[in-house]
Length: 296
Image (cartoon, rainbow, N blue to C red; front, side):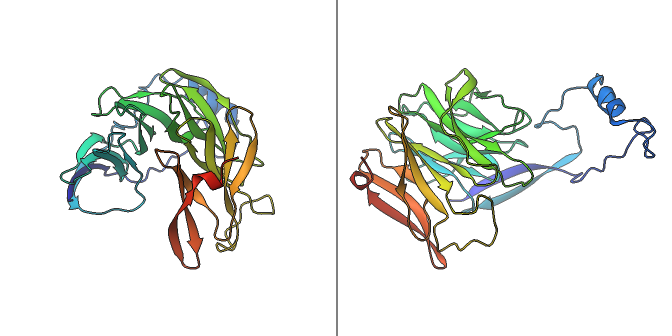
């Protein structure tokens, strides 16, 4: 499958912001003056998709990509995927991909609704990463969440189609941050309900996934000792563990803990198999596990 892409690229890749005279390089005017002048600005609201900068387009064809998120429609006929920040659909049988949502906004992680009529996805179209909703043909894009600081990604549907869970991102002194699972009603969103609590602001958790009956929520979490993010941990040891929340009792348990870790949990549509990714020496491998072995 070859996909033809047309991507608008701003000519000004980097912008250097200089202090105005009001800010005063010598510090004669305090930070409050700069803040006040910013708030009083009557300029147009920033539009991610139309920054007002000179731009051009790049066109090319490709038949493969990396860092792609993929989902399959409930009827098994269509695949939806992201590539370079745009979202496409393609028949399972192959063929030309159809652009569903594109442009300068960075949009990833598409997920079909249980009835196959709608798609959740992560987008910075509103200025920061939030969970958005569109029809399966790409029409009627609208935000579900409106976070402006603790941003969201990894949105997944509850089997009822009335709710979704996403990972809320927390940071402190270090950029990697940590995650919590939050549930929102679809499509109105609201403030959400916290389902899990992070241990700290450095050990991550994410990649939520519901069991088909909605009883369990699975995710992967850094459960390595030390209480902080480190670049030099042994990848063949146990870093990430697949955990599970019982949506009825509120009990949280570890369900897959092994050498090489375990991430990207996915339950099969019939609820019989748990699939995940783990490290095996220098390789990353896909593992399938009978779901009955991890159920209580």
